Length: 154
Image (cartoon, rainbow, N blue to C red; front, side, top):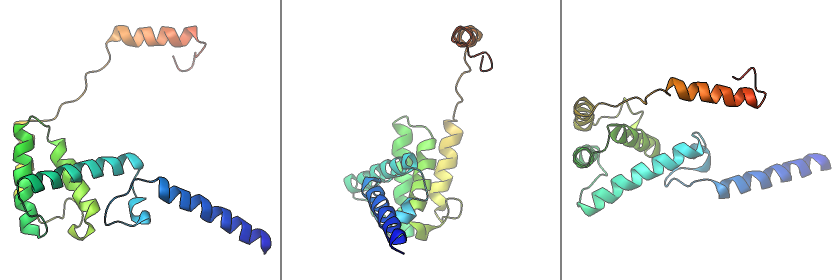
């Protein structure tokens, strides 16, 4: 019984440390924010912060769903004109649906104007894939691995 209490106390201490070290997303509990990786939390926090800052600078309201829809359209237009890729809008919608769970999943959110603006953004500025490594670089990496004795990996 005593050993079980000590184990529970150690587990509690580790968990409390983890809570202190995690990225904080406003309005979400620790367990809710733990449903995604730290990198995703950082990405969501940055996207939402940029949107809210834009809303503040442009005196845009975003509490009600129709206000949010209008503010998102304004933000997306500004980002498009600044040269950002469509992933910025997609990431923002995903971040907002995470930070504001009452909105639902990204595909279910009732922000028709913002979704239409995002479709237009992606049509006018389609995403691009990364170029593959040149064959010479691949051969050079294989030779380096062979010289290090990494026969299977090469």
